[in-house]
Image (cartoon, rainbow, N blue to C red; front, side, top):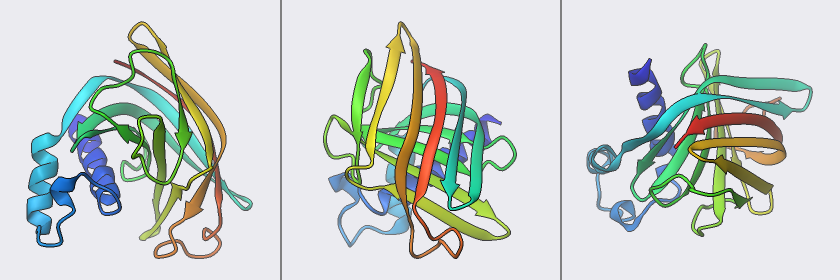
Length: 187
C-alpha cells in the first residue's frame, strides 16, 4: 500500500512538474531521465498518513476520490495527496511552496501556480475505461484553509473551480469541475 501511495504521489508530482518546477528542471536540455532522478533525489514523505475524500462535480456527473491522504516534499514544494482506495491512479493533489507542512492554521489562495507562500495549486486526476481526465485550479478559484491543531492537520473545502485539461478531457468531462471534500493527516 505504501509503495502504491508513493508511486501515485510521484506520478502526480511528475505531471505537475511539467507545468511548473524549480530552476533545476526548467532547462530544455534536461532529459526526462534527469528530471526523474531529480524528483527521486528530492522526494521525502512528511508526517503520518490520514484519510480524505474529494468529489468533483462535472455537469451531472460526480467523480469521487476517497482513501489514504499523505504528504511528500519534492523539488522545493510540498504536495498533499488523496489516493483513491479502489484505483490508486485517481488522485486529488494540493501543492504549495516549501518543504514543511504548516505549523499553524493557514489560509491559501487557490491559483494556477504555487509560486507565492500563500498560494496553492489543486489538481484532480481520474482514469476510467483507459481514458485520463484531469482538472487544475486557475487564479481566482477560491481559498482553502489548512487547520492545524497540535500535530493534526484538517481541511474542508467546497465549490473550488477546476478547469479541464483540454488535451485529455473528452465530452462530457470537458467542463469545469466543482470540487468539495475534506482530509486529515498528521504533521
